[in-house]
Structure formats: C-alpha cells, structure tokens
Image (cartoon, rainbow, N blue to C red; front, side, top):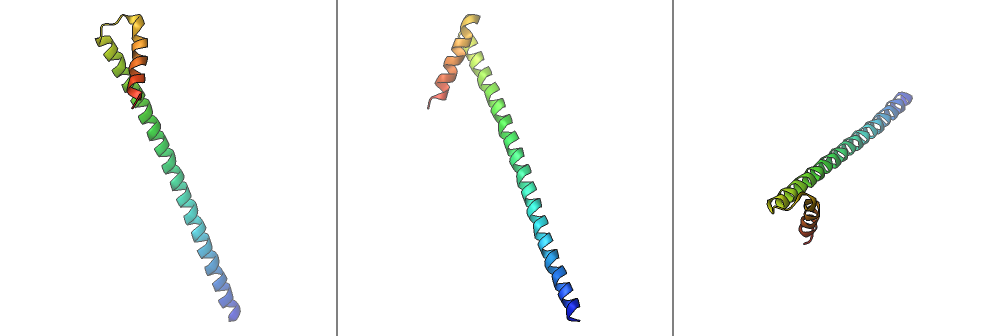
Length: 85
C-alpha cells in the first residue's frame, strides 16, 4: 500500500514539474513572438518616417523653385536643420 502511495506521489510531482516546464516554454515563446512583432513594427515605422521626411523635404525644396541639380543639397540641408533640437 505504501508503494502505491509513493508511486502516486512521484507521478504527481513529475506531472507538476512537467506542467511548469511547459508553461515556462509557452511563455518564452510568446515573449519571443511579441519581441519580433515589436521590432518589425518599429522598423516599418522607421521606414515610413524616412520616406515621409524625405518626400516632405523634397517637395519643400521644389516649392522654393530651385533647379533640379540643387534639390539634393537642399534636401540634405532641410534634414540637417530638422534633426537639430
């Protein structure tokens, strides 16, 4: 009778251990997926911001009526000025 009790106790402890290992792995997988999603979102926002900033500077320089060969210099100047606090 004591042997059956010990076997049941051992199985319960092993089951609890396996449950916690599975839970920890699932949590780690979820955290990893969340981190990857966050990085992708921030990267996409950075690309969109760069495109908008570039297009805004380009259109601003064109509005000044500059010749085509001076527009790249103007865009760089606008970017540098907007980057300063």
